[in-house]
Length: 163
Image (tube, rainbow, N blue to C red; front, top):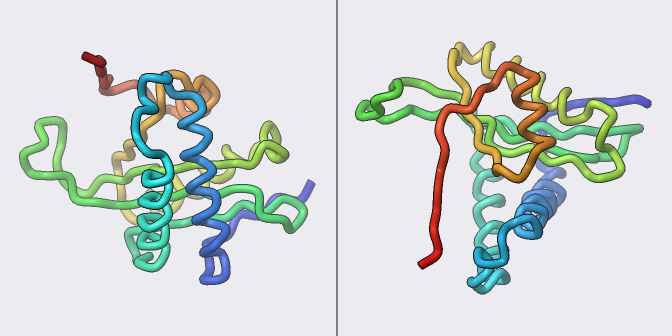
């Protein structure tokens, strides 16, 4: 199978927004039912607006990669570079964020996610970033396994309670 990873171009905008919403739907379907108290149409509308802003405002500190398998788009990765606040007691300065990763079901298990991660990390290194953060839901065992296999380790844990 021919796998190609490339930077997003203007004609990828609608596909990118579609995937960002699809990633949200995937996450939502795996969340505890107690988390689903809001109007999800409003949530997805806000996600679409934010995805469009991210896409339209791409710059040297934003990377959107598109994965193509047999010349068909099958996923994306979003990486950003930001300035961690000087008040961050765990390290300030320029930090990389591996923000999003999505691969269509038909392309999972053939290394698409790995290749997107590799190319994003290569970009981070070329941008002289020495620390990269990411976030993964505790229920997403496949994502956690991918990240741990690539040297990421658990650093912080979030908790919540419904009262």
